Amino acid sequence: MSTTEVFSLGVEEEYQIVDPTSRELDSIAEEIVQEAQKTLGKDVQLEIQLSQVEVATPVCASLAEVRDQLTRLRGTVIDVAHVFHKRIASSGTHPFSLWQEQPFTPRARYLALERDYQQLAREQAIFGCHVHVGISQRELGLQIMNQARTWLSPLIALTANSPFWCGLDTGYASYRIPHWGRWPQSGLPQHFSSLRDYDNLLQLLVKTRSIDDPTKIYWDIRLSERYPTIEVRVADVCLTIDEAVMATALIRALIRACHEQVIQRQQAEPIRMELLRMAHWHAARYGLEGDLLDVHAQETVPAPVMIERFLTFLRPSLEASNDWQEASTLVQKTLREGNGAMRQRRIYRQRQELRDVVDYIVQETAAGTPRSHIDPSIYHYINPGLSGGAESNPI
Image (tube, rainbow, N blue to C red; front, side, top):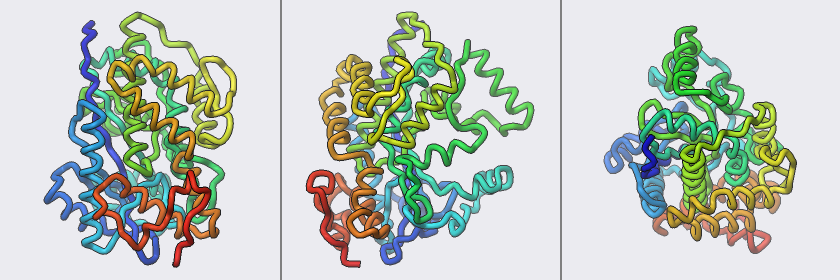
């Protein structure tokens, strides 16, 4: 078994299209994607509903490349949306737009999902971030997946960014997680004894017409059927580029750390699926504001303690990639200022106005892109995580 891996990176982000007057989702994706593709090519695509667009970075070797590519992709999509008098928002759910009002993208792939999954597909107004990490051998990738599946809940807590749904505070930091978890082929994968075991399951699911093909498996972590990568799918789409870079760094470090465990022939811990599912629920429910479940120590601990344990586990891998300083700084910033869900709620508390939250999401989505991408009419919040408040929104 080869021990040489480059751990290349690729990041996919799903964005909301928002009308700047009503702050509602706007179903103009076909026009925006068609125009954006003149600059970005296939790096920007349609998604299941016409109020969504998806971007995907090229293969990147470093966090610096990921940051540059996300800046390019976000900035271009934001600019194109402005041409059509629309805005781009990066949040796991829209604070108040109704799923009933979101038309499906008229492509065979998406219409087939509606035909097969009915109400589940119709309610798919959620937005995630998927990170691919390059692994050359599928057998090796499967063994890494067995190890990494037990460490995903801290990522959920750090990237939780979907507290509101259809005008209500859900009580969850990431409502996207339980919402998406209703799909039968979503959630955590089981432990697999071998690649043959894994492939046999996928073949059985196809044979029984449970899925059309192996690409229709949507687990929280999976082997990509299109690329030689492991894909981690637990993160809400992040408010800021900084947070997306943080998530990418932690995910690559996780895959690298678990790769090292496999090379050293360490067996994956036999942790029960029920405990892992509860760990994900804790992270989605409380984010960074409650206790998280440490499945390795089999105890609940305050979220900052769990995040510190996660960082301790990842530190050798982060240092090996020269990412420790940047990643740990971004994690500490998130612990200090709050994840996306906490910051959205903080804005809402100012005036009990969800349109303010949309404006804040739009502002944060553009942060880190050239200033020309930020609409001055919504640039009125001042570090709510540090100042304790925001300027009043003159809506």
